[in-house]
Amino acid sequence: MLQIHELTFSYLPEQPLFDRFSLEARKGERVCLKGASGKGKTTLLRLIAGLETPNGGAITLPPDCKTAMVFQEDRLLPWLTAKGNVSLCSSDAAAEDWLCAFGLEDELDAYPSTLSGGMCRRVALARACAVAPDLLLLDEAFKGIDPQRKEAIMTLLQERFQNSLILFTSHDDAEIAAFATRIVEI
Image (cartoon, rainbow, N blue to C red; front, side):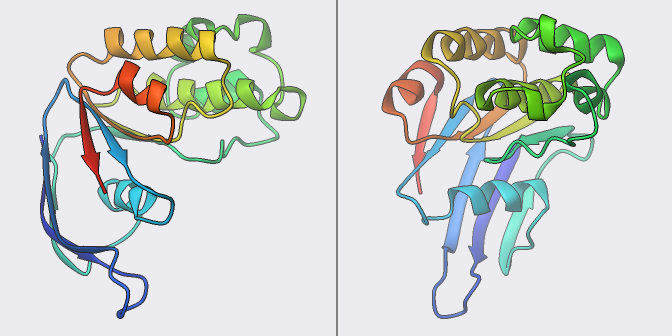
């Protein structure tokens, strides 16, 4: 499904982040991109999403691949409710389904400024999930969510996205052990 072939990329020519990096990942996998801060995990997700342009090599996805991304920051629109933020990318029904699935049934009409950090993370996750992506890119998406709820969300993602590819970054070893089917060191 995803093929990265001899990817090269650098922000500064003398400091390459990727030098002929290759990776293949398939539907049904949950691949954790693991490495120290500054090693390029977020940049790799941005390259895959088409938000950055490689200096060389190729990133290949199927032409009809629907992709969604959760960034390290929630990136919610403050003038829209939780449901409004999720409905931007989906139907109202899908928005409500995912918000309720993530325990936000009482917050559908709440604005981001009234939600806790963990609630905002769940709204951002719901927005990406409501798209029903073939490829889900999660950049430290579970950060700030309490452990019990995080576990329930990871279980739900495993169940609902069995036929999708999930690439995620994390520094939490317990999270990686519970969610990843494969780990790629960056």
